[in-house]
Length: 402
Image 1 (cartoon, rainbow, N blue to C red):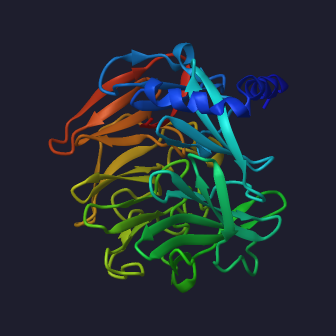
Image 2: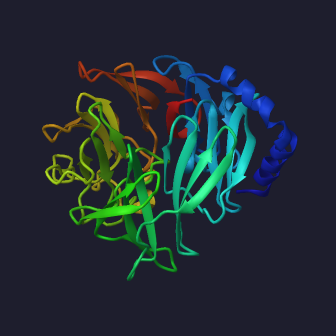
C-alpha cells in the first residue's frame, strides 16, 4: 500500500474517533441498501457500491462507489447488517466499518492477540463471530468469539493436533455447529522459506463437543485434501434444507496446490457426527475434468461450483487474470453436472453467487461480453443478463447482502 493510502486511512481514524462510533453505528442500517458490490478497477483501486436491485440497470462503482482503504481486503472481508469486518494483520486489530457519506469508514475495533489472519469464520447466533487461525510463528492454533455489538473478544486454544513432520502450517477450512457438536475440517501445509506451498495429502474432520471444545474424534480421508478452503473469500460449504452439511475439498493449484488429488464434495448427514462414508462426489472425475473453487447451494439438492480449464491458463501466475472459469450446476442426489451457458469468467477466489427468491445471481468478469450480474432460473434453466457493471472494472470481487 502507498504512503498516500496509509495517510488517508489514518486520517479517517482521526476524523471518526473511536469515542464517536455509536452515532455512525445507529445511522448505518437506515442508510444501507439491500446488496453490496465490491469491485477492483484496472488501476487496482477498490470500491464498494450498495444497490437495491441486481435485476436491471447500470452502475459505475468507480464514479459512485466508496473507495476502500486499505486496498486488497476483499479476500478476508465479512459483511453483515450494513457493517464490514476485517482483520488488520500487522497489529491484530479486528475492525468494524460502514459506508458513511459514501466513505468506507472505521467505527470500532478490538485486538485479537497473535491472530495473524482468518482461516475461516462462522456465526454463533445473530451477533457473534467465531474465527479460527493458525499462527505459524508461534505454532499456535486459536479461536476467538467476537461480540459484534460490543466489539469484545474471547480467545482460546483450538484443540486440534498441530503440524508435524515436514508440515509447518495448517488451515481450518470450516467449522460447523450442530447442537452440542462442532465439526472442523482442516489440513496441513508445508511452506518453505521462499514461500513455496504444498498441502498434505489428507483431509481431516474433527468432531468436538460444544461449548466445551473437547476433541472427541478425528476422521481422515486421503481421497482429496484441503476441506473448506478459505470461506472469507468464497463459500465452500452449506447446510441444505434437510440439515445435511456439505463441504468442498480444494486441492487445485490456486488453493491447496496438490493438483493430483481431485476436487470433491463430501457430506455429514444430519444425524451423524462423522463424514458420510457413502457419499463422495468426485468433481474432477466428472465431465468437469478439472478442479473447482467455491460452492453455493441453490436449493432442491443442487449447488453451483466454479471450475478451471487448465488448457487455457499456463500456471498460477495467470490463473486469476485469464478468463477460463466455467460454472456448473451439481445434482447432489444423482452426482451429475450441467454446465451453464455463461461467458468465461476470471478471478480465482470470488464471492460471486447469490440466491434470492428462487433465482441465482452470478457475477461474471468477462472480456468482450462485459461485466454483468447474470440471472439463472433453476426451475426453467433460463439465463439472462441483469445489472451491468460499467466503468474501468477488472473484477467484481464480491456480491452479497448488505
